[in-house]
View 1 (cartoon, rainbow, N blue to C red):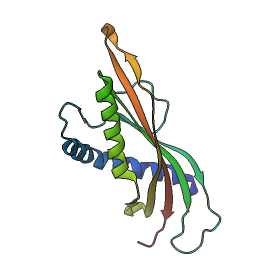
View 2: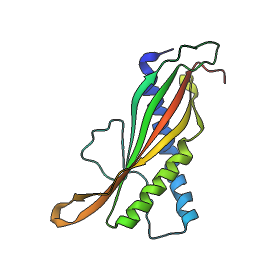
View 3: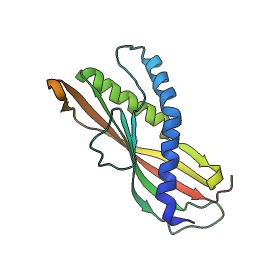
View 4: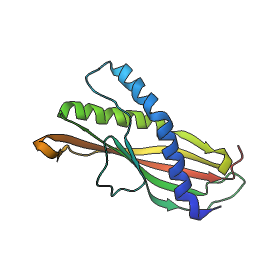
Length: 170
C-alpha cells in the first residue's frame, strides 16, 4: 500500500470523473426539468483546496478531509483506507430563485456522478468506491462586482466516504 499517495490518488480519480461526466449530467437534468430559464453551464474552475478566494463560478472543489486505516486488512482485495472527502460547487446568479434551482441541479448531477460508484484507474492499479453521506446547502450570499452590480452565490457541499483499494483483483 502506498499510504503517502492515498489522498492524491483518490482526489485525482474523483476530479477526473467529475470533469468527464458533469456536462452530460447537467444536460440530462436540464432536459428532464424542461426549464430553459435556469442555466446549467459547466464548471469554469476546479480546485483541490478550500481556501480559493478568486475564481469563476461555477467552481468545483474536491478536498480530502481525513483518512482512516482499518485494522482488518486481509486478503488480496482489502480496503487500504477510508478517505473522507468533500466535493462542493459554488454557483452564482442574479436571481435568488434561479440560483437555488441551479444549486439543486448541480447537487443532483454530482449525486448521479458520485453516489454508489466504483471508479478505477487501471494504469495505477487503484479502485475506489464512492458513497455520498450527506449534502449541505449554504445560505444565499451576495458578491458585489465593479460598477455596483451584484450576484447572489450559493454553495452545496457533498460529503463522501471513499473506500480506497490498491492492487485490487479486478
